[in-house]
Length: 102
Image 1 (spheres, rainbow, N blue to C red):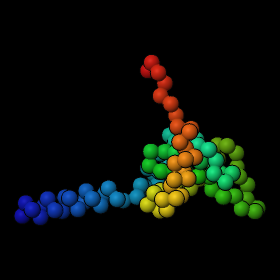
Image 2 (image 1 turned 45 degrees about the vertical axis):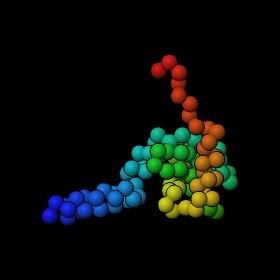
Image 3 (image 1 turned 90 degrees about the vertical axis):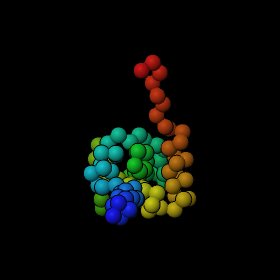
Image 4 (image 1 turned 120 degrees about the horizontal axis):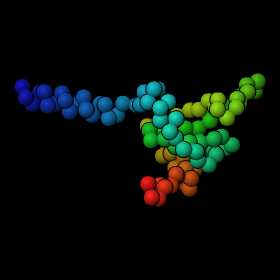
């Protein structure tokens, strides 16, 4: 019986580790993300859970102002290693630096 309980707990833990982040978690993560270099003319940010990229603006749509930018989350589980490498390189040189003395 103890073995079954441990197996169930292990399966639950493994499933929670692979579950994608919720929309609320991604929204909170985006609020603390830092800006990176643009990719194909689109703004990019790096958060703790995902990278974020400015959504495409199609003909007839407005881009909005700087405080109202639609974004798409870029998760490693949904993208190729090549795509993730492109985001890593865009954010590599603009990573925030720790403030000394604090």
